[in-house]
Length: 347
Image 1 (cartoon, rainbow, N blue to C red):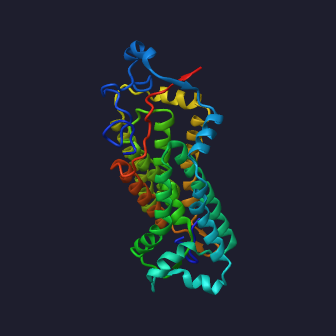
Image 2 (cartoon, rainbow, N blue to C red):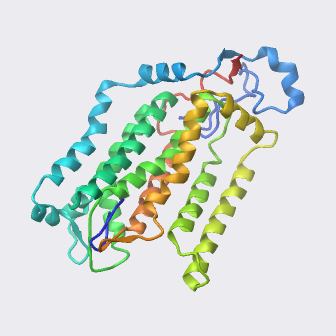
């Protein structure tokens, strides 16, 4: 997690014209809609016309990863821990000179501060978070067929985001120094809902729309508010509860309004449970989405004279999600997704 001693800076789319949508089931020559997306009455007459493939397995998932991964991808992935460890080996006085001082900000320290750690526990915590988020995100992206999108996002978060996060941090003036990689880690967390949605559309639900993704964003904001803000009958406590409830309700309403009628959530759940390998990845991803905010937004942000910068964590998450979702919705990355049509898995 990010600390300060006082504070830490601590067309993807398948065959349709809309990048947010999966393959167009109504287009000429398009395969019939799957049971997950078609009312039961329509499914019966088209069941034999749908294409099939072997049921998902961990072996198939690993083969897909080996086919899509590239050895050179290790360079950007490993560059971050190498730089973080290298900076930590510098004398403490030098590291402190790289930290971001709010009262005397400079463009150089706005960038370097995010790669500075003063305690080994702080460094190890951020390295473990990076390994989880970058490693899992890369694997999901490769299997989903959006490897290039993830690598561009990774480079953007590690090169462009540090300066942006530091600049926005000045909106909350204080007398402190900021340092730590956790703001960038929260950016990697912010792209994860997008990657999981693309993975789900590629591997299990080719007709699923990505228009419901903002619902996940609002629900996660509500969850972060619930974790970070005090739960009490004071004004701040009531405001925290109100923000949490409001964000969650907005997410639920958005999800319901963005999901076409006739699409069965129960059928989706059954497909995830029965989809060994692919379904397990989605379950693990959901667990990370629920659990990781507890790391970035602890109930007590103070420890050992340091303060976890909740503001920069929120900025990292929000900016990363908005940028990633915009890139997908505008078709900026032309990597085919769900191009094989709806799948019915063989028994």
